[in-house]
Image (cartoon, rainbow, N blue to C red; front, top):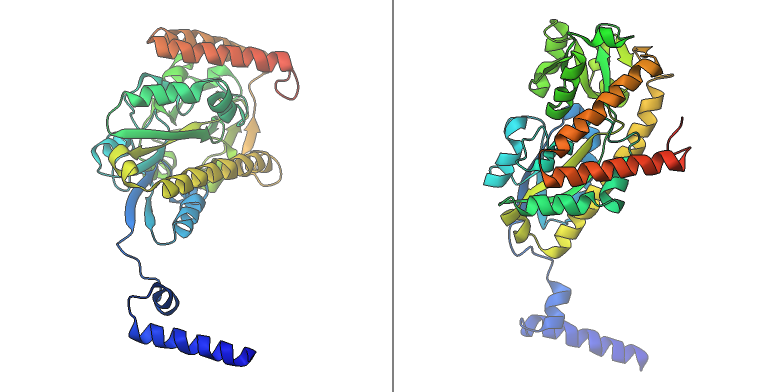
Length: 355
């Protein structure tokens, strides 16, 4: 009898599937999944060249495209591929591209706090300082406030990259060696380095290697050891200064507001999660690489400016901070947070701060 009941049920389902095309049960069992509409498609440009993008964003975009399951696809473009880096923010705002990964500073964001993007001198000592400042010391709320005033762009998140060291064709062993040095660097960081006699240079990413090889520039103050080796600059420079002007680059994710609002909430959440996964990947990739390339895996000779001499650079940075704070009340709030954070880290002692 058990067998008979099963056969009868199967016969019923078979007949229902043929005779009743509108039956929900039969349609669910018989019909394959058909996507109702074309997927949402974004074009995202990163600040990074192709070799660097393989680490700083591509894994997370690949993960997003897989997790979106055909509902959305993000096409990734590297530095200057669609628009010049200095026009990146404006391109997101006008909808020329849908999203960007960059620091606020070099992308020419119009907000006052953009100067704190990339390498604001001595704002951080370690990469963990950046997420701590944004998530626990109030910078996230300040960034949300600032970008709420800019039509067309939604700021989503900021995270840490690598420190800012010099990789050059000439050795640097004293502050005197910095004078007249021509280096590729970021806008605000370059303004500070001018105080030390450095000549900051802005060039498209793809032109940097040739500029170093031809002697147009003497090197870069754009990254740490990991990137210097990953992108090939370690093959055409000779020296790496262990002193840095910042312990971590601060970069952000931006989207065109209209395009963002078109995305269903579950896909927005997936995108935010993959941003976080990128933040996490960079934390351990850079932490590994900065030590590895200084020791067993590096190609460059390490040089160091004596600590007492370098202290004068740190003191100069505090003057720079006060000048930036005077530019707007909101900048003053950020500088106040940075000062309190630095005091907290010093008071906490090792491993937060040494010496």
